[in-house]
Amino acid sequence: MPDALPSRRLLAVHAHPDDETITNGATMAKYVAEGAAVTLVMCTLGEEGEVLVPELAHLASDREDCLGQHRIGELAQAMKTLGVTDHRFLGGPGRFRDSGMAYAADGSATALATVRDDTFWRADLREASDLLVEVIRETRPQVLLTYDEQGGYGHPDHVQAHRVATYATALAAVATYRPELGGAWDVPKVYWGAMSESLLRDGLRQLRAAGDTTTFEGMDPDGPLPAFAVSDDALTAGIDGHDHVEAKLDAMRAHATQIAVDGPFFALSNNLGNVVWAREFYRIAKGVPGPVDPDTGLEPDLFAGLG
Image 1 (cartoon, rainbow, N blue to C red):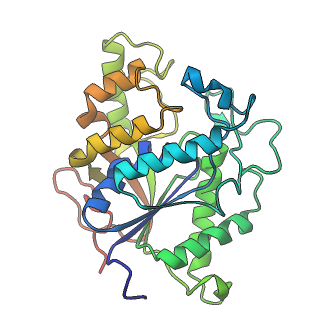
Image 2 (image 1 turned 45 degrees about the vertical axis):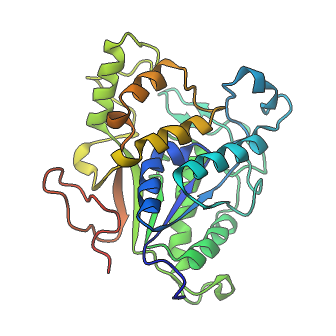
């Protein structure tokens, strides 16, 4: 391993700009502040996102189709806020297009009936994975973060990011697999981001008590929840990002076309920022968990247990 590499290295693989901040923002800021090398790989430009800023509505995919280029700038500003200097697009900006999504009968996200050939959802798995293999072998992360097998809430690009990250992790470890992509590297620990069921229920109760009945419409704080809500007993790690929650909130604001900072959900959760946004949870998918915090039963450090 090159001597120039920092002793702790983390790689996050995400689908669209803003996913990284919502899911891992405090985690990335924490580890950057502690001197770890943090690399973000984004798989699409998010061309199909809904534009929430009226004066930028012309950027939408059904008009000028320039949203992706705009979101490159939003991502750069968000990463500057979090301190992440190494952020890349898989295969370069625009290599894979945002696939868009539809809603299934059960309310989960799913692929559109017709999907363009240049989208990430239609990408050849090995082709996309090889691009990530090269990044893994270059940066040699001890920790890789991505989505679970259903992409959290079912978005096809999230599911594909999970597949690419999983396959690339396996391929990168095989010394005889495409050595021209770099020396083999076996990522010791892989984590899937997760939403704590108990935290989501508490947040829903506070939203409903504040009179917000439209955010997460149809979700009952005491009833069944979507699959992205993970039972607390399945969580294995919890990052306390209280020292970095303001940076996370500012990074979310940088994604202005995607996050309505004046909307009721953001307004409420911003006021409760230390509760809602400072804690990020994970399930370990590869590797051995390190020591846990006796108060939470969770790993407080994703690098715990590594030499």
